[in-house]
Length: 154
Ligand SMILES: [Zn+2]
Image 1 (cartoon, helix red, strand yellow):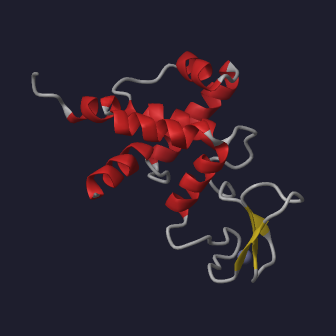
Image 2 (spheres, rainbow, N blue to C red):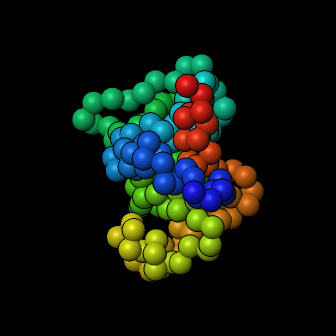
């Protein structure tokens, strides 16, 4: 086999594919994955910055992944004040799009994201534009890099 440039190696790796599939196929695990990246030391209130007295609101009365701050008393999820905020899309859809944007060697066509996520052309265009802007500013966790790092750690 000829020398394989790095960008071709890991997307073909079965471990990588399996992990990406598990993360992005289920909304709860996608949210937990994002929480780990956003809050490596535990939840932090996006409203006041408090990270000490955060309560996870559990039970059927609350939506999944909802937290309350013990300082300012406001409620939040991991999406608040991120590029994912205010979008009806699930986190797993955002992360799947992010995965393709960060692993593709070529510009990802809007129609491709549309088909992958099962959303409208307009919504796909919005997702791509938002993610590209965030990536330019360096404000997003990169699923590609994270998976790779995890793999090499063991
Ligand atoms: Zn707060």
